[in-house]
Amino acid sequence: MDYLPWDTFYRIVSRYRGDYRVKTFRCSEQLRVMAFAQMTYRESLRDIEACLTSQMQKLYHMGISSAVSRSTLADANEVRDWRIYAELAQRLIAQARKLYAGESLAVELKDTVYALDSTTIDLCLSMFSWANFRTAKAAVKLHTLLDIRGAIPSFIHISDGKLHDVNVLDMLILEPGAFYVMDQAYLDFQRLYSLHQAGSFFVTRAKSNLDARRIYSAPVDRNTGLVCDQRIALNGHYSKQSYPEQLRRIRFKVPETGKTLVFLSNHKTLPALTICALYKSRWEVEQFFRWIKQNLRIKSVYGTSENAVKTQIWIAVSVYVLIAIVKKRLNLKLPLYTFLQILSVAAFQKMPLQQAFAGSDDSMNTEMDCNQLNLFGY
Image (cartoon, rainbow, N blue to C red; front, side, top):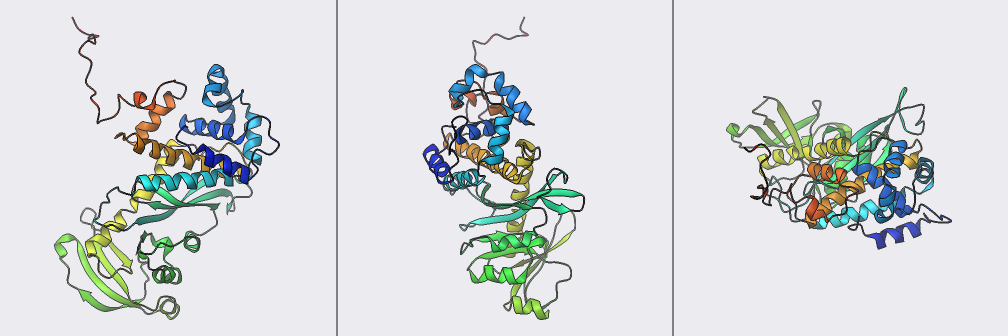
């Protein structure tokens, strides 16, 4: 927790009056308790209370002034403005992106590559009536723009389940020269043309009913899986008004499965195989969703209000980014999963972080000490 920018956090809390008339269990303690719950896989408020009560003598040294009851934590999640933790997460994201700016990509590009997608978190309709989704189901959506370098989310928006993915394109602050990789759900020619006018590039999948005519075909090597590399113009009355310029259409046959994929892009000079590789890098955002769902507590929620759910999700994102920051600053080679597993069993241990990970870092010598006795020796 020392790696958190606490001065910045206190300024954010003051801006949103998070500690106004609060005598005990301030926002800093709420953050520590919720981060503890994320890192140690606590399933409920009762679970959090039981674990912290069993370690009463160590709470003060963790920055928690007194015992934490589930009612106190529930009230804090219900009342404290979720924007406090959303803004903290954005500050951590800014730090992490600077640290991972030099990471290499699977393709040889100096430009920033973003993957845009969303994931749905199912909820119970009777308890979460504010999270509209379907007739008999509630849900929230986590819309994420992931920087492929370091797998750091640069933009996150939490909405109810009914918000269509394509609407998120209206919320983005577009970066000229950057690549935005998206699936078919974001195929809206008017919004894509706005992205094109901003000087950004996109790579997406074409739908089967795309109405377009070929303008020019570039030669391709079919041994690489490429079927064609074409310049096209849209034929539809509304679509050609929404996107009046030419597009690039690339057909690629996946050698392993034999499936043919059709990509659309507004970048005219990149090699066709690079465009295909860029779309393949979109898998990073799927892995990000899988990782946070498997290793952080966002599917099991600690409260039923919109404020409580958003607070929990934003603190989970902060924990993910903080782990990435600590891993980079300590120059640890182990994966994030191993990092979190070690933290979960060493939460109450008083030792330097480097010592906790000394036996797991692949870059360190893990050979057994020559003075260590062999348990099964004769």
